[in-house]
Image (cartoon, rainbow, N blue to C red; front, side, top):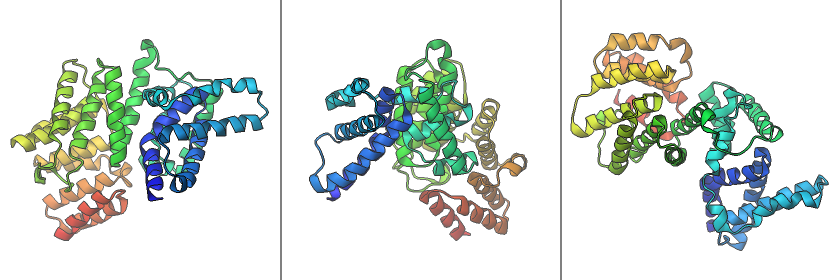
Length: 388
């Protein structure tokens, strides 16, 4: 029984995005695909613990989703002739499992000009990666209910406008590629390791599909750097961490990708963020002082992609480079917009600690702890508080 539950949960976590993409591509309707798949997962949780896990779990789910869609269309008195386009659902599992690029197509569907730009990234995160509106709400500083309503409208728009599930033509690809990269980056930065792995996989697909796009290469490098440190049990400044559990193979691949991107001489946000990670990691591994280089990279990042995160990152780099007055100015410039931004308070705490203001350090850490959304971050802050 436990095996049935475990397999259902594993397939839901690892294959949901791909199965939604396959269904949505054929149906032309994201809402219908998600509903059908949700129903199929529900039936799996009922059936598999009692009857055993089928030989091909994904094919089983596709078949159940098929029956749900057919039943719904019959209930709506759609003629049997109109059901012929669903015959594809009865194909063998091997053919279904080879359709791995459907997620990329679905990502590009979500960036269609008919979709409101403000909802494109949340739409991609939910449909392809299963991120809920509740998880996204703090990132967009918007109520989950509002995001949920916008997502429903966007999915309905895809069906009503009959948006094709294809990679766009070259003349419109660049603008839409930027939006796809932003969604994958969003998944990487949420803080969930499973999502980070999905982000790495999708970034690899994009880099393979667009090998001459330096930002696609840069984003994949950034994913590799982040995941190279994922097994490190001690979050915090890299200068204080052991390198024993780092994934050096991922680091080497990231370095190679970053060098390839740099040769294109078209810098951008993801290349610069990857370069910052590279400088941190190389400095730690080779015992080099690259603090000034990291400050310079953050300043350059702000010219390409000014953001609250970039400004807080710059402040943190300035603190480590012993430029505390500049760090204070950087933090002061975003204080009005950072009320609920956890990294802001972590950097404020670090600045206060350097300035030997223990009471302020504790105050900022307690605020950061309240805003923490993952166990590792919370554990790191609690340990810091204990040291005080």
